[in-house]
Image (cartoon, rainbow, N blue to C red):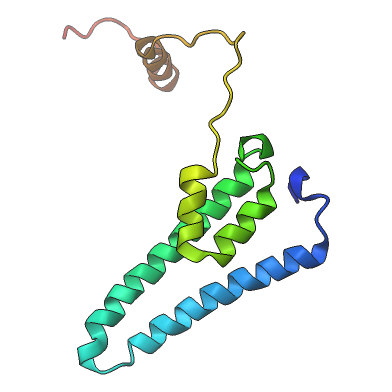
Length: 139
């Protein structure tokens, strides 16, 4: 199911962005495989680059999932597609930029009821999970 904020985007744009994301991941995997076939003096460099490639892919996935789940009102530029392009095309810097500066915190309603104290909520959860206390435990 496509998010409501994506309804006005042409299908070809979605396809191009999907192809770019898959191509980036494929190139990262190919680079990792190539580095492990190098002579032993390059193994250390290969391992460092492998860790960086895994970190890059992880940051991209985290940023894109957060962007997909976040309402449009909580995105800084008000347009998710700008951030998708930044995250996919600018690689690690784009994902970090989105995670640091691209998100707005959720707005708290002024007429919302205050939450109960944490100890009351914990006791309610414990009672719901294990049943009410019988007060026979002398601690």
